[in-house]
Image 1 (tube, rainbow, N blue to C red):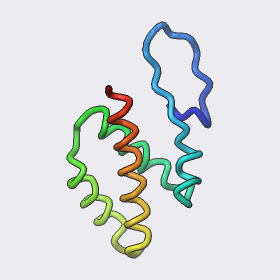
Image 2: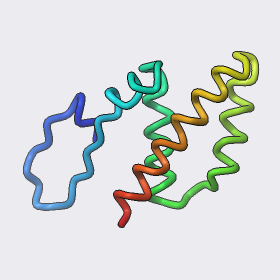
Image 3: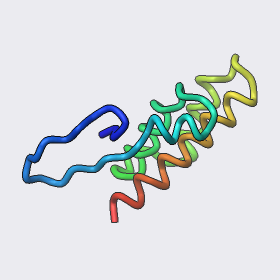
Length: 88
């Protein structure tokens, strides 16, 4: 869950919180929060390869230019690192 937006309730289960909005602002664009979240999910679930995700990001943002592609790929990488750490 996004610790910048959610106050968790006690559930008795494991809860994984990340300051996603804060990280997106640090990367330079709050709109990257969704791509960070995608990276976290990829790191936790191994549902997609990093290469495949980066290729999808490049395709999706191709009309926006290399700067936007690079920013979103960086956001994915940051999320991926977090997801892998949370998985441990």
